[in-house]
Length: 131
Image (cartoon, rainbow, N blue to C red; front, side):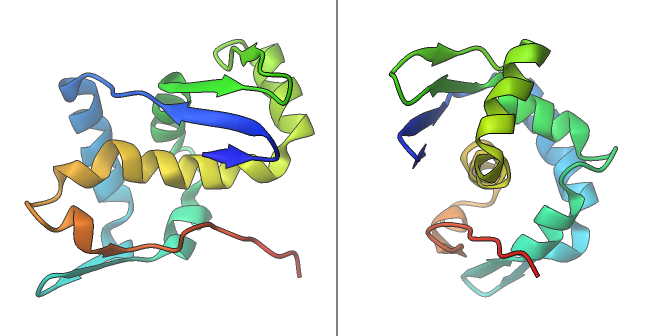
């Protein structure tokens, strides 16, 4: 994902850790994913509404653990340090939710039955507007 010249690259996690997080996520998002025939729909609003919740914190930490970031100056950003994490997302607040949504797709879509992951209808980008 490239936003505002900041590059976020998701890295593959170990199977057991990813599976455990996928099961937690599926339990949390029960009503947000529907499968009918060969079509899968994901309620982005349901995912977004859970970001930041106590139940979702483990999934978010998992996604952040397996992301590599290069800033506007092509310098690495170490998100596992709280001070660096806060500094980075204080400067790039609009990146966090799209990063988490993309991380969910990257890490967990392949746990769905064969062929289902490619049938997921997701927007190319997530745009949030303040009311």
